[in-house]
Image 1 (tube, rainbow, N blue to C red):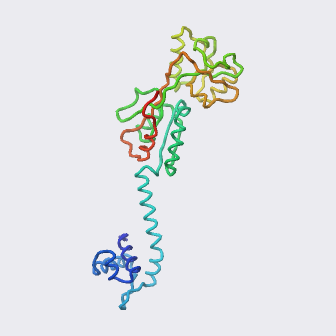
Image 2: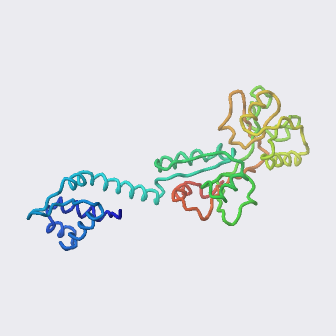
Length: 296
């Protein structure tokens, strides 16, 4: 079938106007044009919808059945077009976000919450990945925006980025540790501690902490290797070592642990939002509007 909305609209208008003459006035066209449209509708349907055997125009039984459901058709068309309009305006659709652990402890949850409040019909997907994997997903158009630390040298010209936060460091200790009650410490005060380290994806951060220790004239022992934040926390609770982490770790502190800022190390953790410059997702524009323009 090659039916059109105009054919249905003409039929509906003729019925509601009481005839061809009035319908022609409403639609600003001629009666012959309406007759031709109705005939083409009936030809496509394979049955008559209007009874033109008398001076008045009435509906056939099939026409009555068709007319009774036309309102649903036009309501559905309105819904479809409104949905498409919302998607075009970034008010509907989906937005896929990836993050590194350092990012989810900072401003990102607040940004997502604000975006959800402004665009409740946009479905948001949020997943953790190491920064290098996030970059791969962006380049393969499998994610809309990524929040990464380090690895900026891997960004291609196809990727846009914006720094969103800069963090200092803190040490995570068991509550019973002698330094746990301090408001801040110097890194050198940890020279006799065993440092927990991350496995391969954590290497840039492990190297950063190592270099900071070397600058202060000590190396320290390294202990258990872990991958997830909760694993690190568990090892600290078990007394297997201490953990150096971005200062925003205070937002995820577990019972039995204390996070103490390291005052002689500046803000060395830069978190950036990264997205593909050729993205076609209208929802991303509204999300980008919520990112900070500058960081302290």
